[in-house]
Image (tube, rainbow, N blue to C red; front, side, top):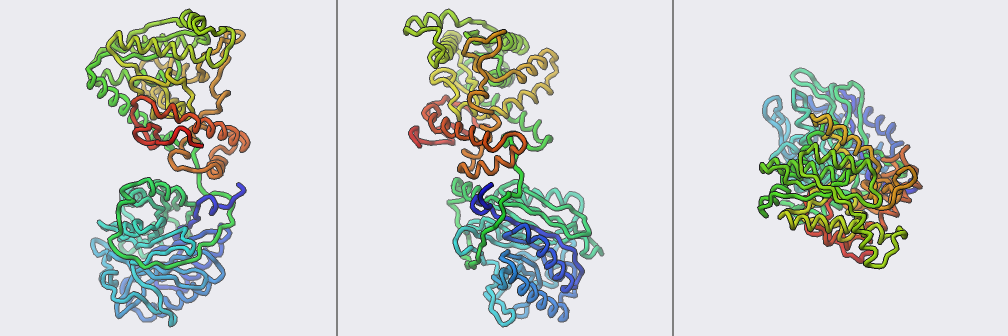
Length: 635
């Protein structure tokens, strides 16, 4: 990468669970400053510490101690002075007194200045918690400022922090605030805070870790934010409960990183959150854009420094459409097939048709379409003989794909028809005065259109509908013949990219109990992707391989995902592709095929503007009626 992470829209954040001693601010301050010094080489923009990190959370009635109060104020002064050496924003926790009341506070410090202090809103006072014995709530606050070292500091949960250049906003809540029915972070997000910080002391018991993680994850999704969570560790008192030091950084529903729990050493996690992605999703979300915060916030400005880091500290999957974790994949594949088949079944019921026509090529896409169609017929108890699978050998059809198409139709017990199109295409060439020895685009597209004409006419004859087989990747690239495989009466594959098509079929292989079906499906998966429109080469070898012509689908699906889903520009996509495809493709290869993608994607919108109906599957969809509206003459 030649650009720093700021220019690519990232913000670097570290969440820390430090070693600590109960009621020993000197020790705790030493640990925090030591950690800050050691991780400064990571160039973080923010470092978050747990709730009451200056004193520890489990001080109990020691919170009333004047000595502890004095030591706390001394530690805050030390941390403030220590921060003069850094541009990083530090967020620490400490008990502070205001107007005779004690508050559980988050203190925001940067470059020798305390920017603001946020008290806890919801004081936990049930089960093992009894904070109301010591602390007052934000709702009990009577002053907008609190004095530290003769300086009046903005004080209140109505503070939102904004960089001087207006490029970043963040807000703070404390522990129980997140668990409340209406968390303060709801309003903070609606007021523009892209990053939400939570200083916490959350103890452990069976099942709580999973619930807490899902809560952070889901809340970051609901607020379209980065949610940064830090909780104290096992050095807290274990008289009744244990704290694990659970720190997490979530981004719009995804946990980017978290710490090791139950460690007696200081632990931290670091991630680069993508502000550009968060803003993109907020702008697209009408519910978010149409909502207003219920309170008025005071804005505190701070200086967001450029980060020198050149390397993005996060991971990107080379296959963003494929579930990342093995445990998710089975349920995702089943869900996709359920969506496809139920949508098609609904259409068949609507038009009162018991017949579906599929052009079966022996390739990946028509195979998946057949699987989904068979499931649809089973759902509404139609005879699979009503599925008319037509394989249409042409100028470049290999014996392998023809054989697989036949075996596939037999395995699914549908009606098979073999219609050789070579003679009719040659007649067509004569009709339009085209030399059959000229293997140009006319030579190829004439075959594709002949096949579609057969499918459409057969549908009329059989009172059925033509099932589309083209996938999302082909639709994005315009890798289909206009008014040929581009057209159908209902496309069950329109929302599924090629990388996911292959994965679903592979999953179906493993779930199938028919040995003969497993064999043919495995062969289809291992067959090179080809339109088979040019004559076979020497030894009946394929003369066309799609990925050698337009590039690897694994790259194109990556480009589609980050272009359509998040609106990323080339520089951002190249940067994350460098991470995702390290060791798989060189940067030069990635850029070469990105330029092919970019050119084809924008030139072929006219085809997408007239695609047939097809069911939406994931967050990326190219239907002009549902998700993607773009002028055909853009760029």
